[in-house]
Amino acid sequence: EAQVTQNPRYLITVTGKKLTVTCSQNMNHEYMSWYRQDPGLGLRQIYYSMNVEATDKGDVPEGYKVSRKEKRNFPLILESPSPNQTSLYFCASSLKTGNSPLHFGNGTRLTVT
Amino acid sequence: GENVEQHPSTLSVQEGDSAVIKCTYSDSASNYFPWYKQELGKGPQLIIDIRSNVGEKKDQRIAVTLNKTAKHFSLHITETQPEDSAVYFCAASKQAGTALIFGKGTTLSVSS
Image (cartoon, rainbow over all chains, first blue to last red; front, side):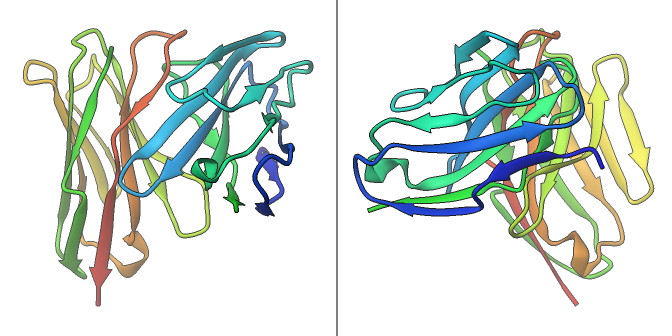
């Protein structure tokens, strides 16, 4: 089944403790992206990757890192999480960026205390 | 850069009624306009999209219209059902290589 898989689904952590949210897609998509969803703010792009070893900042990249060493995986790294990073995070992929349909994972609910 | 405005933020209808959600975009070069539906506890899922060379597209009870001159596009859902209750997002982008810009979403509630 074609899908984008994120883990974990739920994560509670404390300020400053490094964490990684994994994302994997099995559709051989070139483009992958991370979004955060907050009430009243919609979906905001954090980072995106056009292909392996090609990543770039989205609209809200501060406090986040990503890597794209393999085509299928695109982990999101929070080196020192803060409470303002409490949010619902989505990974997405598409064949190409821009005018190809995005496929989303089911989300990771992160709480930073 | 591109900016997408979506209205209304919430919409309540009775089962069987129609629902319309409207979006405006700022960049006249945008040429791809998808709509996503997000059900509770899930990620957004593409339900319909339209490209700038088409004025209208239908898929069963769902239709999208595009007015390039006015730079707005709309989602129309006819004969709404309780399972249509969800958050709907519009988005816009230019050619391949540019990001999709999303509206802030519309929470649709369909009561039976």
